[in-house]
Every structure is written in structure tokens, then in C-alpha cells.
Image (cartoon, rainbow, N blue to C red):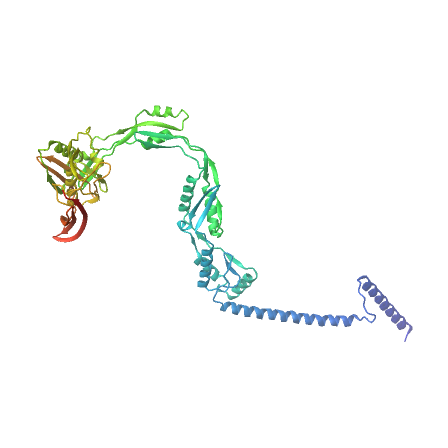
Length: 527
């Protein structure tokens, strides 16, 4: 070996030694502690082997994960119920069918809804029935939404949704509705009944006076706030077995507005009139006004008082309903008459006074006639005379004696006009002017005779007392389906002290009976 080669080899060894020394220093700095027989080539081979094993493991895990996902996707795709992790209003409905979920939710809601919404304000307690609010939970829509979650046309997307709800459950809210107007009406009603509620200024009519009252400050229900409280409480099912404090606000009464009050009570009188094509009657109406000037009434309110009294006056129409002639009543509906003795002048006077009060009276459809109210109290100042009456089974003279003949005559005319009987009583004894069960007695303040105009057109009562005959004609407008009316009355029994009878009203059309009505069963004393 040449000297040159030897020297080159020594240089290489020297370089190698220097490289080894440098590598040792580097390993010492990085706190590695290699074994004495460290060989970088061998370590690199081990690293490559480990890397291959790790790659295989990761690949195997991915394959396993994909396999598991495919299996999960297949199983999830076969699920015909609600997927796992779905809640409705906090209730777990996982794996339930649509019908089972509906039943489960409905039972839960029913169990947690109160029958009444209990409200308190200091010592005052009240409630609002839940049934009055028409509360409705839209369970069908919520369950439909729950069922359709994770059931799109993409099965892989469905699996992702199912995995997500499995890890993080989804809660679906149920839409709740109620009758807002009814709830606000109930709250307004409660507001007016609070013990410390505001007393608003107001007014009322008493006799011929207008009474205007001042108000006082108080509390009223905060309607909007309470509406929100109650609606949320029902929706969240938190009101059962609970009292809800009533939110209130302080309110001052409104000032007295005399101009508005005047506009409210003032009314012009309306004259009665009628038309013939078609026949229609427009009744008269009384008007109303202050009996003092508006300025006088306004000045009264300048004084600080709890109430103010303003006198009123009635404004009468020029043409009242009773002034309308019989030409507005084209048909006579019924007529009935009874006889009386003209020799008894006092009794005749009583008959004429009573009949004059009734004669010409018009009853609108639905209006009820009261004999005592129309005829009034039978007094000497009214012109009534002493005449025979029945008192405790005896015939004695009494003020207004005989007017029951007018009542009985009218009663029969009303029956034949097929009008509705509201109140009727028989005499103690069978009277001479009508048969048993065809009479009607009256006693002012205790016994009245009333009937109702149950027809669709007004009726007019025309009464006359002259030449020994008391007569009633009832006018109106006949319809196409009028009935022929028959009255049947007869004695059903006799004893030594009593007479028993009954009466029927029989309605016919084309000669055939279509209805029979029992009018009364009566008991009379023997004379």
C-alpha cells in the first residue's frame, strides 16, 4: 500500500471518529442514552417496520369503522319508529311509534295541566277554568317532526343525523294555542273584582234624575303581563298545584266627561209610523234630556263631591204606537165578548175605566202584556167605584169590583188569537159571565194576568164597554199557516164544596186537529 493511500485511509478514519464524537455529543444534548453498540442503520429499519404496522392498524381501524357505520346505516334504515335521542317537550320518545308517542305525550300533558288557573292578589283568590280558554297542544305536528327526523332520502345523511342525536339528544317543542280574547276578557273581569281595584267615575239613572259619581284610585290587572305569564305557564306545564300572583298596576279614575255623558243619555223622541207594502210598524220611542241647561250641569261638577244629581225630563213623541190606527193592522185575529148588567152603574164605571186603559194598546213581537201594569192600581182617585167582589168565599163590595170581567174577556180573546199565556189564575167561584176554566182573575200587587205577543207582527187591542157588552178585538197580520182555534172547557168533577174543571186549546188546519194544548185544571168553590 502506498504512503498516499495509507494517509488517505487515516484521514477517513479520523473523519469517522470525528463524526462519531459529534453524534455522541448531539445525543447527550438531546438527553438520549444510546447503547454502546448503537447502529443508525438498524434503528432506521425498526422505525420503518413500526411505521408499516401502524399504517396497517390505522387502515384496519378505518375499515372496521366503515364496516360499523355501514351496519349502523343498515340498522337505522330499517327503523320504522322515531330514532334514538329525540325528545318532545323534554319527554324521551326514542324508538316509539307515531301513535305510541302521541298517547305518551297526551297523557303527560293531561297529567300536568291544571283544571283551573289559580290566581292570588294579597288575600283575594280567584281562578280561570282552563276549559274556558280552548287550550290546544299540536301534538300531531310535533310527533310528525320527531318521526321525520333522520328520515330523508339520503340514508347516509340519516345515519349522521342519528349519530348526532344519539350523542346530543334533540328536543322538539310543541306548539300551544289558546283563546286570547277569552283569556283577556277573563283577566279584565278579574281586574274589576279586585278588592282594591280602581273605581271609575260613572253615572246611572234613578227615577227622573241622572246620578254622576266620582271615582277613586286603585289597582288593575296588568293584562299583557298576566297574559304572557299564563300562556307561558300553560305551554311549559308549570301551573298545576300552583298559585300565580296577579301582576297589577296602579291607576287613577278617569275624569268626569259631562259632554260624553250627555251624548250617551240624550235621545230624541221617535214618532210611530207604519208602511203597507209590506206591512211594517215602527213603534214610537220616548226621548230623554237634561231638565237643566248643559252649562248648569257642567258648573255643578266644579264642586268637589262624591256624586252629582242632574234632573232629567222625558221627551214624548207626537205620535205614539197606540195612536196608529187599525189600518196598520189589516186582519182581525180574534174577537170575544161578555155581557154585563147596565143597571149596576158603579160596576159599569169600573169596567169602562179598566177597558179604557187597554183600548188601543199595541204590543210589538216578543212584548209581554201585564194587566196590573197597564190598568194600574184601582183607587178612588183613579175613579173606581165600590162594586161586588169575592173576599174569603163571600161576595162583598170592594173598590174596583167587576174589572175581572175585562180580564176574563181579554183572556178568551187572547186564547182565540193563539197568543202565549204567561200568567193566569182562576176565581174562587165560577163567574156568571164565562164558564169554568174560561175566567182570569187579578188582584193588584199579588195576582196578575200576563200574555206574550208570540207572533212576528205587532198586535193591537181594541176594547169597548157599552150597551151591556164588553168586547175585545185583537188585530194583526195573518200569515199563510194560520190555525183555526177552538177552546174546549168542561166540568171534570163535583163535590159538595168544590167544582173541578179543565180547558184545552185545539189548533186545526183544513179541518184536521194538528195540536191540542191543556190550558188549565181549576178548582172552584160552590156558591
